[in-house]
Image 1 (cartoon, rainbow, N blue to C red):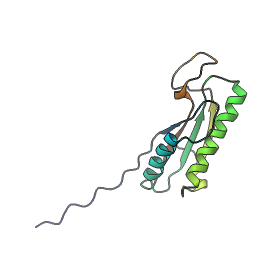
Image 2: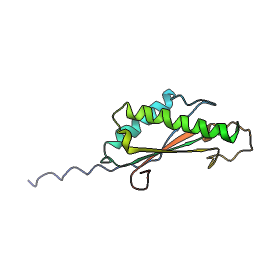
Image 3: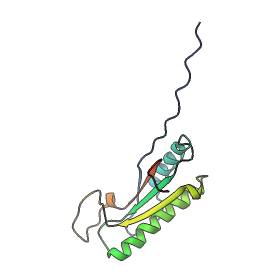
Image 4: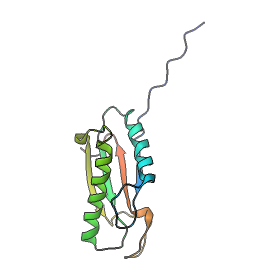
Length: 127
């Protein structure tokens, strides 16, 4: 009989993987941890490509405060990834604060879908 076909090559799923945060928090929730664990598993198929973290907030709070909160969300996401064998040198991040909302809202509105970090892999992701 002919030999079995070769196993399909692993495909790098570049994301985005999106983790959401509670209001005024940069703490990784159990739901966020589950998504991050999936992102970490997928990274093993990506041959050490660059990782980009993009942190966002909703429109409650001042723009200045929200930029800092978005940066703290990036930092907690980075800490989670690096504690689970993702090389820190592969990760870049940018805080966007209130910019680029997933759900457009008026100023001052709390919207879960906008409180997030988006993780992408591969060429054009950071570095």
